[in-house]
Length: 98
Image (cartoon, rainbow, N blue to C red):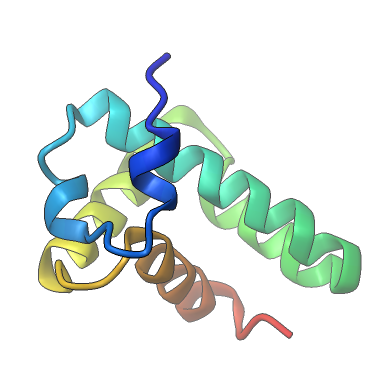
């Protein structure tokens, strides 16, 4: 497993830089971000947490499809932090975070 703790936490980190990472590094970052968001959302809104889980984690194939969708959205919004884009995609699928 690859870790990118310092760069990915930096305010200046953008999707453009994220897209230079290996696909496995990108997938790991996306998976970790989605899993953490589902856990946090589920504490205040169990339905939203369940929605995120169903949207992303039903199978490896589905997670791969979602990773591609997220990666494509990051590419179209490369000037933004990838975490912001990941949250935007999840909100589109499961509603706004409160």
